[in-house]
Structures are given as C-alpha cells and as structure tokens.
Length: 433
Image 1 (spheres, helix red, strand yellow):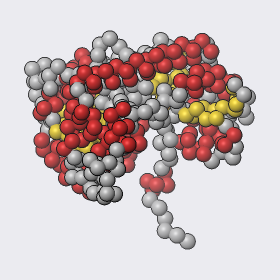
Image 2 (spheres, one colour; image 1 turned 120 degrees about the horizontal axis):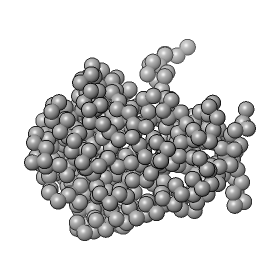
Image 3 (spheres, helix red, strand yellow; image 1 turned 45 degrees about the vertical axis):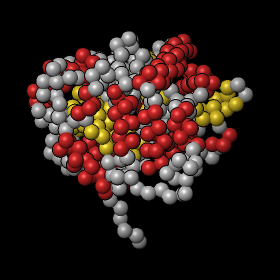
Image 4 (cartoon, helix red, strand yellow; image 1 turned 135 degrees about the horizontal axis):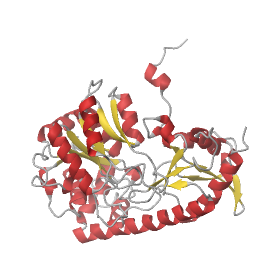
C-alpha cells in the first residue's frame, strides 16, 4: 500500500488545451501520423530578430552569462525586463498612462493569472471572480486550484460567426447578486477571437469604479487585432474619462504571443495600485524569480524605437489576418453548414458543428477520436488534427458541447490542409462506433 493522494489530484484532468496532445503521444502509431496541432497557442514563428540576436549572444563577452553563471534576479524581475514590458504597452498609447503602473515579471502570463487571483480574491474566498464566458481555460483551472468561486456572464456564438454583445445591465445584476470582487476581460479574446471594444471596456471600467471592484485585463493579444478600431486596453483609459479608475487596474502580460516566445516563459502582472504591487512582489518571493535567461532575451526589445515596435505589431497582424480569413473561408466552403467565429483579434477561431452533426455529437469524443485513432490520407501522408474542446472554456458544458477552438499556429502549408483533413475526420467519426 502507498499513501493516498489528495482529492484535488484524484479529480484532476488535463487542461482542455493539452489533453489532445497527451492522448496523441500515447497512440501506438503516432510516429506514422502527421499531426497538425491546433489545440494550443504554441506559436511556431521566430521571435523578433533583436531577441534572436540576444539569444545567440548568450556566450559573448557582453553577456552576463558568458562564464556560465546564472543567478537569481530580484523577485520583481530585472529593471530592464520591467521596462521592456511597459515599453511594449506604451507603443500604441497616446497617453503614457503606464507611467503610473508598476510591473512584476512572472513565469509566463499563467503565473501572473494566479498571482492576480490571490490578490483580488485570495485562496478559499467566499466572494467570486467574474469572467466573461467563454473564457480562457487557465483562469478556470487556477480558480479551482485556489478554491475561488467563479461568477459568469455568458456569451453565445451566433450563426453569423459573432458572439452576443455584453449587456451592461445584466453585468450589473450579476455583480450585485454574486458580490464579485473583480471582472476579468480579455480584449483580444482567447478563446473566441473576438475583440472587446474600447468603448465597452470604458463602460465596464465605470462599473468597476461604481461597485468598487477590480478591473483585470488579459492583454496578451493587445496588439493583434484585425478591426479598424485599433487596440483595446485598460491602459488607454485616463482618469478624466473614468474618474477613479487609477488604482484598481491589473493587466496580465505575456511575451509568448505577440513576441513569438512561448518557451521563454516571460509574463508580467502590471498594476497602478502600489499596495497590490508590493504584495504581489511579496507573494512572488516564494517563487524566487522568473526565468532569468528569458528575461535577458526579452529585455532586448528596449533597444527598439516606438516605430520599430509598431512595425513589428503590424507585421504580426498582417500575417495572422491573412491566414485566419483564408482559413475561415475555406472551412465554410469545404464543410457547408459549419459555423466559424469572425476573426477580429488574437490567433483563434471557434468552430461550431451543431448544424452538421446529429444531436448526440460530443466535441470531447470527437477530439479524443482524432487524437487516438482518427487519420486520413492527404498529399500522400496520413494526417490527424488536435483540437481544444470548448467545453473547457464555458461554465455550461452544453454551450461548448458542439464547439472546438483552433489556434492558428501551424505552418501555412499545414493550415491549408486543415479543411480537408477536418472534413474527412468528421465523416469517418460519424461511422465510428
């Protein structure tokens, strides 16, 4: 006999964005299958050239690592990396409102999420955090880990590919009913690929001031937008526009997406509340510090001018916009009746199969089929897809039962194959016992 593990671990299942990969890795013939992994936003593009140059120079005379010594940085992160995060935010802002904000560098944006939840609600909180449903699955998983209750405002994917709008009065009702401690927004939205407008963010900011709660914004995709409205950000709000907003804002930042640096694991929690900032640093001392080599590589963007940053942001937008719109068009042509969310921001599309499958269709079963046994022949090779079931992003399982999120992270050549591969896998799955 061995000691029992915790109830939390007994009930723990892999994240919706990782489960398909785990299943595929255990597949007996996995080496014979070309897998197109759309389940996780693991970007395959190179980092900015200045970051690549810094990475290649780690052993050079000017590098702090040239003798092989890698010490801890301060828990708050190096000053250069903190400034690099703020530099990245300020590039598209007319007013440098983040001059009032302070930054803690974290192990990816995910660690910043957990620190935010600890600061806003605290472990085993009686008051919930409010999410705009569907929301990024890691927020849900961290809330469960910390025993923090969740409150939801639900959106629904419509037949035209757009999500239902956020209604201010309904939001107020939920806040009053549940006594929520803060609202989490994802302006460049993961998982929906929608963009929450600056006008709506301002309205929600006013609610946060009125109700004396926190305004939290996940801005990992702030500069990846495809509408003509420009970026949406809590840092674009001035105290003149929303009196009282200063001191209640938190943003979650990441080098993973905009800078194509997922594996560096560099994120940040930025806030204009000095007390919260100091306590986040105190909490993070238990983690010692974020990846020091990752900090050094990312901080090289301080050498970029504002125009350099804007040029890079536009390059990223142009790349994703072309791919996402092309993929949406070809999916709808190849699989008539499929609903595909409109690409407005970020790097994700949501697919809804409800009009082309029977009432018993379960996205979780289809994802499992694709990962464990599904395959089809394309261009002389055997292919399958890895998808993320949207059931892991909704509070109501039924809302995501027929939907999948796909991340536009594979090569252009692989993405061109997706409509045909998906169509064949769906047809084969309908015959699967």
